[in-house]
Image (tube, rainbow, N blue to C red; front, side, top):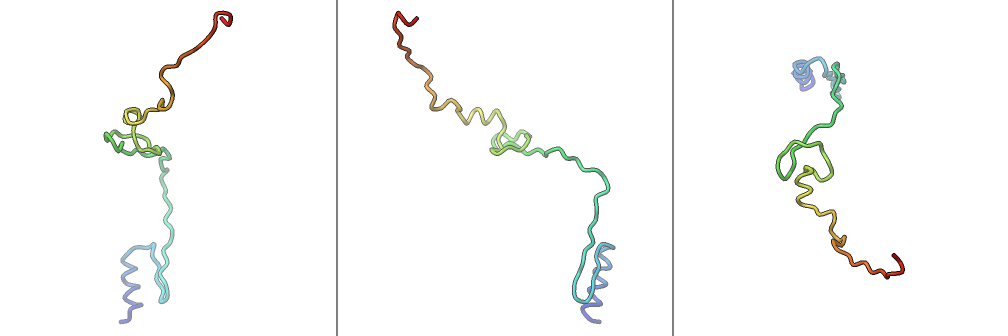
Length: 87
């Protein structure tokens, strides 16, 4: 009983999608019959664990707002100088 006959028996047990020859093993492609859902999956926020749609930061909006100050570098107060004739 050679290796090739033993491998044929093993692959025969694996199911009809496997074909074996003396030199190679080939698998046939199985197609999905039911429709697949194309909506994006959800992940958990890496900070609080809330399910969210994936984003580059993988952080929910609430955690992102608490961690990142988008107004950084923008002055909170400013002095405006004007003369009486320019009003």
